[in-house]
Image (cartoon, rainbow, N blue to C red; front, side, top):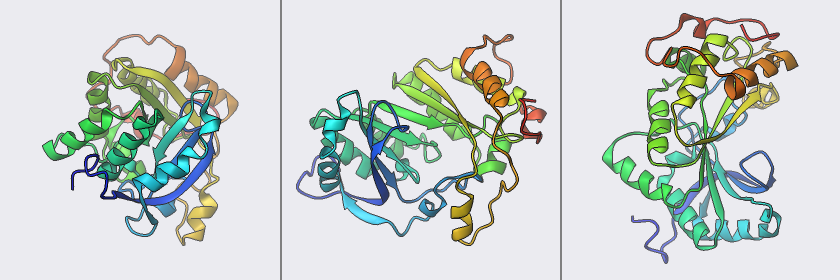
Length: 277
């Protein structure tokens, strides 16, 4: 299948759900498509019901775009379409067809991804590079800067995810970096500073978001018959978030290059909810 050229042959995606009035999924008001299927199992995931690569609803790119365009009047302030998940990069052919059609309509396009499927494999990279031609913004959720801690948190290491960030930077693609502040898990000063230095080395980061952890998804985990892995972890305090934002968004850090290779032992240490440790 050669998506994007065979316009008369539908390209289908496996879709979990859609949201017509998303306000936290990129610039402006967004029509948000949540794809079905994900290989990473993040312990605070809001959509564990979107992990399985079966279920969901098959939708073709043309009809889904027509549905999204019904809400176009809300996009005058710079909105558009965001594809989230699940993990959208597991469905590259569908994304390519969907975004190519969207750009023909002049729609701003964004992908909200954790980056786990990224690979330098020629087959993946060929389609991914084509997709970037029709993508205005990549919102990359970096779960943890330390690969071992990332594996504990999500079940997957992060080397290819960080490689994707570098690839996108070198390609000149606009990036937003998102990082969830989880007390005792990611709210560790050594890790925050290491993440900040990684971000500073990227050339195309337009925005960094420090997002407070919350446990609203715990009920959804239990409804699926799963125990919530972060039971008892409290939401970060206002002081914790202030410090996280100071590190990730404002402070000029000393000793550039620190932590770019070796694992910092503090990155795996659990602490309390009050402040960055």
